[in-house]
Amino acid sequence: MALPGYYGCALIRLPATRFDYRPIPNLAQQGGVYVRLEKLRQSFKGELDAILITRPENQRYLSGFRGGEGALLITQEKALVLTDFRYYDQVAEEAPDFELVKVEDRDSQALKRCLKELEVKALGFESTHLPFAQYQEWKKATRGTKWIPTRDMVENLRLIKDDQELAKMKKAIAIADTACDYIRGFIEPGMPETQVAWELEVHMRTHGAEGVAFSTIVAAGPNGAKPHAVPEDRQIKEGEPIVMDMGARLDGYHSDLTRTVCLGEPHARLQEIYDIVLQAQLAAEEGAKPGMTGQEVDALARAVIVEAGYGKQFGHGLGHGVGLAVHEGPKLGCQSREPLKPGMLCTIEPGIYLTDWGGVRIEDIVLFTSEGVEVLSRARKELRTR
Image (tube, rainbow, N blue to C red):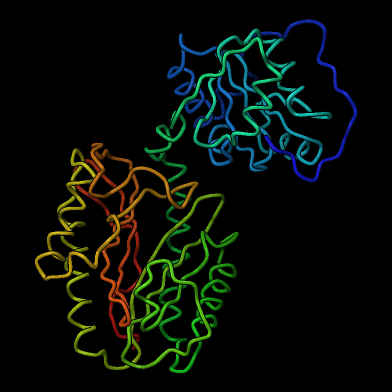
């Protein structure tokens, strides 16, 4: 719970009496929030007295708090937000059913007082998201509490999207789809990659997005051989591949979309490679079923690319989960052995990348259903822009 930019020094005192253990008011009316908290509590019941949530996405998922600076402290009976002056009003608006603990001095002292009042002896913490220096400071200040590392306790809850999350995701996906289809009529030969990337971002922001999901990629010609290329001033030419990877963020939820396009008549090699990648993507989208592992879904697409002789040029996994983070579980890849379940969202994004030539990647977001997958991305897939 690093608090950069905060310089307050007043000492807050918690009440001398212990916390009143009572149901959190109105929490049952919150629907999704109540269910999420209860699932989390069941996951650590009997093993931990409390869990400290420091990852911003997990804080938002459990409480609605979007500040990102602070921490949630959750016991079987209490749900607290610890944060500083900058976020007091925000907590009241976004997490009204959580109790606010005002941090007015050092955050370690506020946490120490809370753990003492709640008699927390065994505290779980998010081991992959708590900086080591912060962990050392907090652990030193709370000597009477045993710090127990946990991993993916909230992330595992986030794997299955509820109806509210799906509605937000579909809106974010639609914004990116619309921007992608729009850009087909905007690109002209001679335009720099940076101009096209900016136009995509402007379109998403002016059509409902609260921001972009990540730094937009527009990589033409040889630059497309870099899966995470950064747009340059290089001018786009006719006949070459143009890889465009974009996403919108709406109410905290992200979309992720990639299309490869071409101005004018594509070179013969580009058409060949594009057809291979599209065939690989369709094989995965048509063959994926709940109960399969991410490794098995990855293999559906990878087999097509390997058979075509480009296996070494497809060096990344087939896809990843998307939600409050643009990269989250589940994973589709050669090492992904967890079974996929209805309600999970994943990207399916095979690609072929050739140094000094360029690349082709096509990416959709799909929803696993009881029978297969529903493709949520709707942007056109034609190679030619016109």
